[in-house]
Image (tube, rainbow, N blue to C red; front, side, top):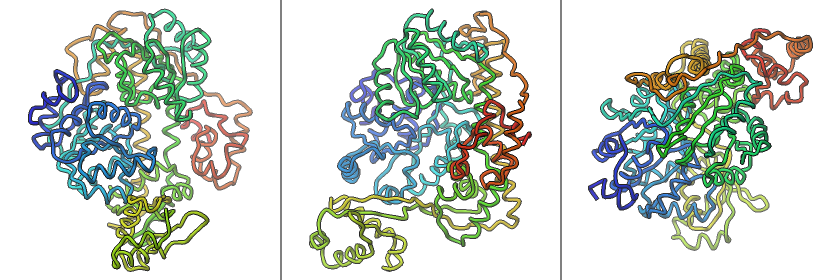
Length: 634
C-alpha cells in the first residue's frame, strides 16, 4: 500500500494521525532517519508500526522494556500484524518459531532489548536478514548528558552501520535540547528531520506541595480521601516505602497494591493486570512500574518521594490523563529525599585508584583480549554497569576498539546419538560436525565445548562452529545453552600518558555525578518556585509558553507552604565511634575513603558483597546523611 491513511484505517482502526505522526511517517517512507520527541502517550509506537507494514523487509524495534514489547505484540497480533520478540522468557519451541518466521521473511516487526546485540549468535543471524528500519525507543539513553545513560545504547549507531540499516527512528519523551543534539549527531539525523510536538498537556493540573517527612502520610491520605475516585499511581523511591505506604492506604480503606522490582514476576504481572482493569485502584510503586503502560484513564499521579530528575518527572506525570480528561499530578516535595537520591549517584562513582587499577589491567592484556565484565567488577570493586561504562569511555577515547562479544562456554544435550545425527548429512558436512562434536567434554547430561579453543584446534573460523551448533539446535537435534559472556577488544591506540587517561576517565564520572546532583536540585527548585510550574517545566525542555499556563497551583493562586529546610547534620557519639571503627579497619574492601563512606551510607558494591560488609555493625548507620558529608568526614 502507498497511502498511510489506508493502512491506519484498515490495520490499526484509527481514522486520523496525531500531531507529528504524519511528519515522521512521511520522512521514514522517503528514506530519511528521524528523531521523534513526543510526550508520554503521544503515539510514538505508531510512527514505526505503520511504516513497517509499508516497507520491504524487517523493522527491528530496540526497547529496554519487556512489558512494552509484550503489550505491543499482543496488540499487533490482534490486528493481524506479524510481530515477534526475542527475550529470555521464550520457551525453546517459540524461540525456534520466531527464527523460522524471520528467515522466511514473514515477520514485519521484531522487538529486542539493546543487550541482545551483545550476543554473537544473534548478530550473525541478523546480518542475513533484510532490515529496512531500526526503531530505537528511549533514545535519550544514548546521551552521556541525559538522565539515564546506558552504554549499550551508545553502540547502537555502530551496530546500525554493521547491519547496513538505511533508516533509524530514534524515539524519546524526555530530551532536553542538548540530548536531542547528541542523538542526531550519533545517528546522522539532519536537523530538518527532528520532529518535536511539544510537551504541554493542558488537561494536567500540576501541583507542587512542599512538606516535611512527618507530614507526608497525612497529606497523601487527605488528598485521596477528598477527591473523587479514579485510577491512581503513587510513586516512591524505595521498595520498602512502597510496601509501607500501600499498607497505610489499605488500612485507610483504599483499594491499594504495592509494585516494585523486588516482587516475583508473577506477582508484578498480577498487580499490573489488576491496575489496567481497575477504574479506581491505587498502586504504590517504584519507577519499575508504568514503563510502557498504556492506560488512558489514570486520573491522579502522586510523587510521594522526589523524582531523580525533571526528565523522570515529566515521563511519570505523562501517564496521567491520556484520554484528554482533567487529571491531577502532585509532587510532595521533601528536601530530605534528596539525600537518598544523591547517595545513589555517589555510590556509582568509582575512586580514581579503582579506575587506575582497571586501566592498568586492560593495558597489560596484549593487543587483542577478551574480558568478563562481572570478573572485572569484582576485582576492582566497580559496579558492573560502571564497568560497562568505563569500557565504553575507553572506546570513546580511542584506546580500545570493540570486537564481537561471545560466550566462553557452549553446552548442548543431543536429542539422539551422534551417529543418528551425522547420518543426515553428506560426508563432507558430517566429517566437519564430527570433528566439532569431538571437541566437547561430557558431564552427566550435558556436553560442554570451548569454542575459541576448539576453533584454533580445528583450524576453522569460530563463527563456523557457532553456526553449526545453531543449525543443529534449530533442527531439533540438540538443546543449546550458553554462559560466561565475554567482550572482545583490540588496542586501537596505546596512551602516551596512562595517568592522564586515568584522570580523564575519573573526571567523566565526576562530571556525571555532578550532573545527577544538579538534576535533583532542579526538581527541588521547580517545587519551590513562586511562578507558573508548567512554564518552568516546559522551559527546561526548550519549549516556551506564551504566558502562564493558567492550570497549575501557582497560576490558580493556591496557598503554597514554604519549602522546609534540611537540618545540618550533627554526628552522635555512637556515629563518631562507627566512623572511627571503619577508618581503622584494614580490610581490602575498606581501603579507600570512598569505600568507607559507601559502607557507612549503606551503599553496596562488589567489594562490599565479597567482603560481607553488610554484616558489619557500622553498615548503613549514616544512610540519612549526604554522602559527600560522610566522605569529607572519613
